[in-house]
Amino acid sequence: MPLKYYLIIKILKELDFVCIRSKWSHFRYEKNWYWLTVWFHDEYPPKTAKSMLKDIAKISDIDYNKLIDKYKINI
Image (cartoon, rainbow, N blue to C red; front, side, top):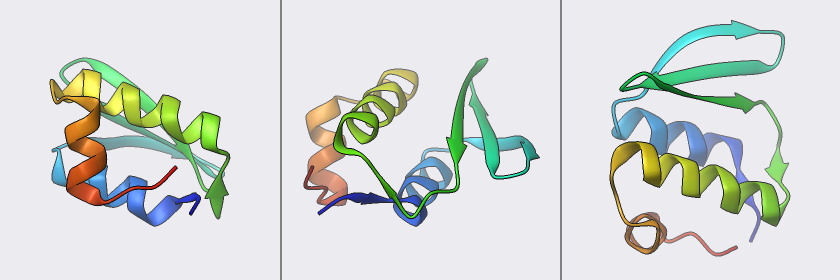
């Protein structure tokens, strides 16, 4: 099952990321001086989804596998 946009936003909000700006379909979320750009897309390709989740886990100091298990993500 591909990763959906609404799930990425849900994860970011639960991990205390803050949307600092948006332009067209791109949204920039920030936490601890690190930022992540998320674009509005129905489904992300698997390679992009893995990269985004690894970045989220790294910024939030959470293990990548625990993040996957917590939100029951299948990539």
